[in-house]
Structures are given as structure tokens and as C-alpha cells.
Length: 137
Image 1 (spheres, rainbow, N blue to C red):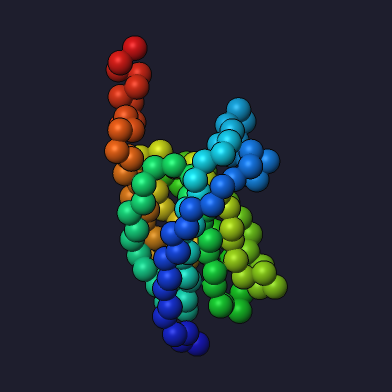
Image 2: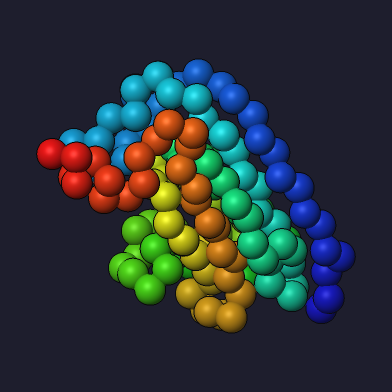
């Protein structure tokens, strides 16, 4: 069944409390500005295949209209899986805040790896590139 393609990117700034999300052991994003990136999954894969976002906290929101349960993964390109979520037909969305550092990432459907979206994360102005902080020491 072919579904209509739809895409929307919603970039908003909202204040977050420290308890609003968990980023892993020892990580506290505190009161930072959060952006939301909406990825729409259709019967042909992701409606938009690439995004460029600034480093920092971004909420990844994946919505789909497919009549099946899916497993979505976020990983650094050519790296390990950073997040994985089972998305049930009843819910049809994945919504998670992630603290991104500069680099390339992939959001993919485990059951159909050819369905993926590439996120290129660029440093914010004045933010050191990956590894630059260690070189300064």
C-alpha cells in the first residue's frame, strides 16, 4: 500500500527541566534549549532522507502510518547503536531527546535498513569541534 509522502520539520525552542530527559550515565542536559526534528516515515521510507542540525539537544520525533510494529535505531554513522525503540502500531511514534555532538548519525528502521535518514550535526558557533577540547589541554 502506497502512502502519501509528507514531511515537516519543526524547530522550536522550549525550556527543559533536568528531569525532562535522561541522556545516559552521568549526563545532565539541565536547562538547555531543545529543538524538535520531525521525521515522517511512509510506505516508501523516510519522506526526507537528510537533515543538518546544530549540536546540542534535539528531540527526535518519528511518526509513521504503517500498519506494522517497527524497531527504530539511532546510531553514529559506521558506529554502534545509540538508541533503539520498539514502535507499536497503537502508538506509531518515537519521541526522544538526544544530546548530539558534531558528526553524522543515522535513524533507521531495523526491519528495513534501506529505510534510513542521515543527520549531519554541525558545531554551533563558538563550540569546539569533536576532539578539539582534548587538544587544548
